[in-house]
Length: 588
Ligand code: GTP
Ligand code: SPV
Ligand code: MN
Image 1 (cartoon, rainbow, N blue to C red):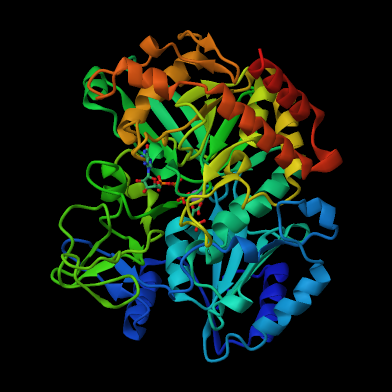
Image 2 (tube, rainbow, N blue to C red; image 1 turned 90 degrees about the vertical axis):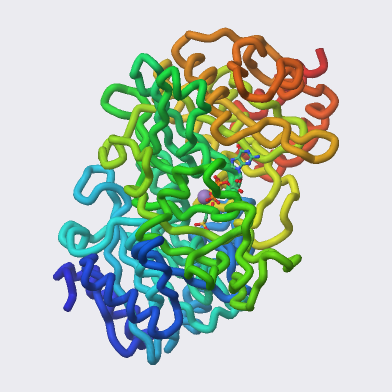
């Protein structure tokens, strides 16, 4: 039974069903009964395995195909009418041509299968900032993940209008040669075929909440960003918020739910998680920038998550969670991954589905991009503002990446325009979150390279325009790097909870409570102003971490010139001027 009488919705579903030809159509109402029944069905077919219900209630394990374990950036397209609107950093194809190509792949793709209709909301259902979508999929795994990552069901169907985002996903044959993740921003449409991996198929996430939403934001005067949102409560009980953009697998989930070092906890510092991956940002009635998290769960990287690095994430995964591509411990029917503890199971199955003995195997048991899908409400430090439709007011915007050298631990931009420049020149080592080489430094402006739904230079212009609207109420902009390494390749900064030491300075800067020193690249803390008590880091090491190597930065400038050339006439003049000014300061 359809959950709505909305003609636009029903006509589109009819059209998609005529093409994909499913045996039946099932609407997802979001009820516990239905979710439970779908879990049972997925276990019966082997699509999922039910884990130890004493230790991990309502938790399940899933393995994707071995050739389908990450986002596929080379097969991700932005199909707007004019190629120049997609820009030099996106794959593009003429929409007519792409629709025709996809039609062939979708025709009959759901024969013998069920088409699930998922009405979902990004944001609090019924709130002014929520946006709605419908995902059609032939995967129960997708349904169950969407029911964790977004708000789904009847309540959404009740309020959905004609401007919903249309999403069609078919597993087809999981054929990597015919895998396509395609966005038609001008039609509010997403089409995904031949994959079963999270970022390619949970269409509310990167596809809608970033690629389509960034396009909507440009036209409607708001922003969709690849950012965590975090509240830091100081000993006076005042909570200050920041949003931070780091590329995939560069520490958003970890920063979003960090546990303060003991010495901070004793003084009364607390941290509240509002979001770990995506922020929708708007100018509020008070003229400040407000951020809300459109998601409802966490799709987090499993490896490296442990009792010490991120206990809050670990606790979030102890109930109602789906684990993907981790190790299955057969002794107690639980899960394991590299970096969970020093006790890998002997009787286990690896992420590929093969027998695995962690005591002797030289191969990894979990895929480096294995993930957990956990309800946000499980998080012990979830913010009281998590369900506030307006979100939270942002004091600081933070950019960061993985850089073994060059980028210092932290610096502050000289102005909003300079901050946009700092975001635009972000570079980071690639990770296992996308297919392709790992550890290669690439430019990833604002951590949005794979997620910006239109021309990157127009996107920078939009940032500059937002700054003009915000005026002196604009958040301050910073850059951080937790990943500088020593000569042996070890991380110098302890990271994780200790990152609060840097956040303290950042937030104090936003309220004129901390000093700074000027460097060629921006403002840095005085080393003495970062609290190092019990950090294991001494003052000299911190000074090294804050060091700005002129020669390396002059190399960097060359790289930025090259990068900027791609954008031709569209590159905002402000950014060229910022680059020239940086070059001049470096040669002083
Ligand atoms: P996506 O979900 O792909 O967007 O990733 P993310 O940005 O949320 O990254 P996440 O927090 O899951 O961290 C990815 C990896 O970086 C994990 O292996 C972490 O253990 C590691 N990591 C996170 N924070 C730090 C840090 O402060 N220092 C170091 N050395 N590693 C970190
Ligand atoms: C990322 O890659 O940035 C993720 C995981 O958050 S995915 O949903 O696959 O995009
Ligand atoms: Mn992400």
